[in-house]
Amino acid sequence: MQADRQEFPWFEVAMAALGGLVVGGGIGWALGRSGSQASAQGLPAGGVAAAAGALLPSVKTQVTTDRAPSIGKPRQEAVVADVAPVSMYSVDVDGLLRTCPTAAEIATIRRDIHIEFDDGVLRATGPGGMGVTRPDCTPGVVVGRGRSDVLLCLFNALRAMKLITFDRPMPILNTTNLYEWWVQQGITIHVVSSSALASNAVLGSRRVNILEGVFSGPGSGTFWSSYTPSHFAGLYIVVGLLVHEARHAMTGGKRHDMADHQTDSSLGYGGAWAAHYWYFRWLTEHSDRYLTVQEKIDARGMATEILPLFHTRPTPDQLVAG
Image 1 (cartoon, rainbow, N blue to C red):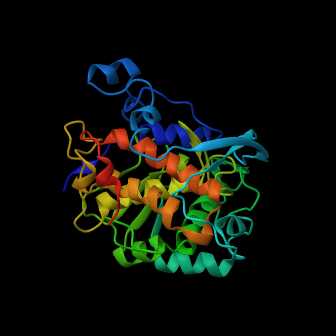
Image 2: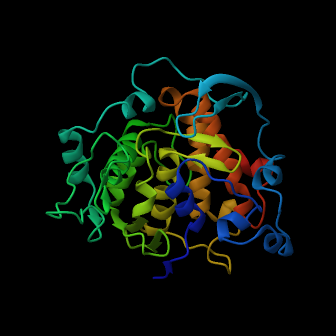
Image 3: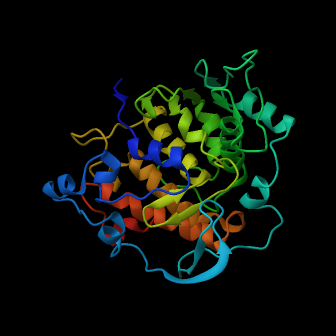
């Protein structure tokens, strides 16, 4: 088995800030390279949205007074012809995230999914050194070295995975519900201290190692998405990382097949970036009542961000799911 140990350095920085991240240089931001380095390899240096713009539908935007929960700026409301309409139901992801995880929900998650924490991740270093055992629904409260919002973000990500049911099976993972798929796969979530290099997984190990900082940004467990090109935050990013690493860790998982060990040859290879891409596409087109139109547009933007991470750029025909 081969470890994918150089995963998502850009993601760890983004989630640590979680107020929005400015990145650029095309594929360079994913690999920790500068834009000039990316250009030297024949890759776009002007940002991924421009590189992929011809392959995904255009977005018409108008500024409204609705405010993005993550960055406090007027958000962009968008209308896209192929984004599935939102049905009017009482339970959606935003409604879910307005509530605290109950003791019963936490017990069910801990029964269904094996979760481990490095020493110190949830332990206070102040008087008594007491460990945090359940999330505080006031996110961002620091408890010594650990943060209660690590648990809040983790449990809310899993609650959202359980809530959102796609109207057709997602490619690669062949599931309509990511939580049920995760339980069936028996994949362990190991939250590692921020001294680790990056989140990672070992092929076929059924174990993902996710940096503590992914879960500990202020407010990280309380909102689903915020997106403008190359500025992104929210639980939909956290779940995307889980999907990505799970594609490595699952039985029959695939490594990144390019020499850099961070990118994939093509969408058709069916690796971690393909699973990541289809996850965002399925949020956009097959999540029905669970997401707002804006949240589906955010997911569409993230799908666009991923396309330059395939060395053979997908054709429009390849982007049509079967």
